[in-house]
Length: 567
Image (cartoon, rainbow, N blue to C red; front, side, top):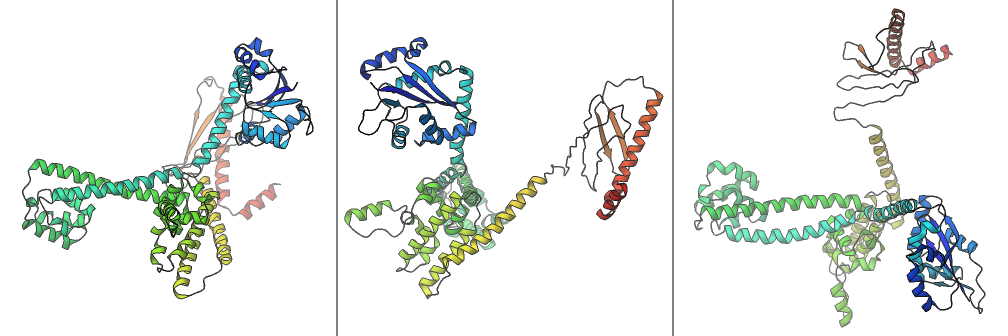
């Protein structure tokens, strides 16, 4: 009879259980189903063989990632080899069976270790019972500690998965380009509607102001054409940015053949024109947002092919990672799937380009060279997307160099000028990228080191230990230096032992006054001798501070000489 073992992966570690001997799984299944909820009966079904806890949270995260991918980790391999009997040789009947909850993990275990694995039948019920009573089956565990381990591992696992998606926030690019396309359609439809609507009253305005955005702004401003006069000419000039066009609008309004409209109709036209203008302005803001996002996420791809075409490629692929994994031949016809499958079905010519046709390079190429330049451009787009996706720190140096290569290739097709070799261009790009990234790192370090507040003040907190009452040494105090202007530096002193905390604020705007705010609770009955000592110490501290301020103005050579003399 084959002995059954069950592997259970917990957030705290790996556990191996032995199931009592059985002959028929079908007859054994109802008994397990009944005993799952009852701990005393379930203890008779399974018995703990071994438990190997994880060393740390990072260690647990690595193991759970391996399990989710169906990969046998080194820790699990060692755990199974140590606690399971050796598998029988080929041709002989297996002496035991290992039950696992993940079929992919079972396949990798049987492939690497040669251990027969099972994931169906009675195994899911046994795993369910182990999961329910795990805190009672393993010594040293409680329901609370088990829950804390599961919660911590769940948060770290989810954080790692989400970070993989958020690290390159391409979801925002996908939504932005989709919204941009929808806005283009809506603005075009609404502009045609406002043209048709306002043309009943002022039909000559379409010929004078053909732009949709300017037409909506003019309709919003003019309202009733009969009220348009010379006084409103400067404002109309600001709208159309041309004095001649503004004057022609004024002349057309005086001799217009449009019909009169009631004030209620004009109010509705004005409201609708206001909405169209707001949509057009929001589209400009969205386009700027998309440009900044593309420069942050895919700078090389946007430098090579443009922000909108690059965003369309990312949106069509699903993500920047998917686009980076595509070969150049797929990138070339991305967006022309219908034409491709139609050509394959009819055995005709396959399309030469898809979304990359909207780039400027293919339009500038000759009719014979369109296919060649699209193939070359798709190759460079694939390289740029891989650099953007898999680089930790990105810059647009490679994208600019790849764009130069495409330009040189266009010149080669037109005039026959031989372009530079790819090796030389990439070496030059690597050198430039190193210098750019180094300068960016320096800027980040400067920003971290200098963090001024809104008023231009910088707070410096220094912890100094004051001597006890028995010691006759001078108190060490941090000086506070106020440069010219409104800047100030605040120092806080923390005392040791029985000394009370004292706050010192120095005002050096010209008076040089020093004020000491002593904490509440000091004894009012203080001897005169102690007061004199305090006055002497305060006088010494002021002398020390003035001496230190004078030393700051001295050169470092003088400071080193003073240190040598003191030694």
